[in-house]
Image (cartoon, rainbow, N blue to C red; front, side, top):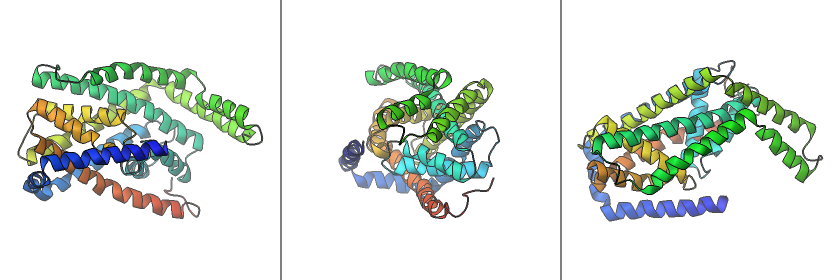
Amino acid sequence: MRLALRIGLFIGLSVFIALILREGAGAILTALARAGFVLLWLVPLRALALLLDVMGWRVLFPARPPVASLWLIAAIREAINRLLPVASIGGEIVGIRLLTVSGVDGSIAAASVTVEILLTLVSQYLFVATGLLCLLSVTGTLQHLSADIWLALAAGLPVIVLFGLLLRHGSIFGSLESMAHRFLGPGIVGPTLSAQALRLDIAIRELCDAPGRLLSTIAWQLSGFALGATENWLVLFWLGHPLGFGAAIALESLTLAARSIIFLIPGGLGVQEIGLIGLGRILGLDSDTALALSLAKRVREILFCLPGLLIWQWVEIRAPKQRFVSR
């Protein structure tokens, strides 16, 4: 996995640099300079979109943690997934640890993150489908889209359904513990781990048996995705190439889908840029504007996520001595 991530980083960075050089860095920077410091408003906009996600995540806890602490943990999760080569899963592992450090029961913490991942897949699937409908509405045709998008959309639904059924009716972590017990031996996998796996499976099933809470989380997540699409709409307006909000949703949803599918490339380097250029051509955007949009989003990503990494390191240093956030 580490080798695959390094290869993915090299490929993504090479594509990113090649696209910038091909289109000309000067033209792209000129477009960004035309917008100016107003682009910094993207940082609080992302903070607000993340807050909507956090409100959905909070619904999954029996005893609702403080919004501020969950938002900070979510910001750290996003920073790790966006800026570090962790295949978009390292942030979730760190998030579980930070929840336990803040006083949340370990089984509840892991169950909330696991179920939230499933619901995020559902929300993202719905968002991508909405983006395709918006693209159809704006262009009047979807014939320009690659067959890979259709294939990914069709193949994604059974995977999501299977994942949900396994969480609801299976004992995933108990089965993993049994496999570890069989291959590693009882000396390594003790009764404590078995009990924790059982508690985690029970906590996940309890969440899956609460459809009202699940639907509420999905609604919050979809609101966050929609607000995230506002970023595209605003940047293009500031760059002097305004598009309708439906086109902004199409850009956001389909580039998000591409980044999720090719998750082994850290930060979606190159993937986001190719997606925005390809979709931009369908929507009437030139390559310079599409790359300027991508760079504006990446600068926002760095400005928003870098403090999260620094806070994470501060937390890890202090964690053995005191709790991260008081309950």
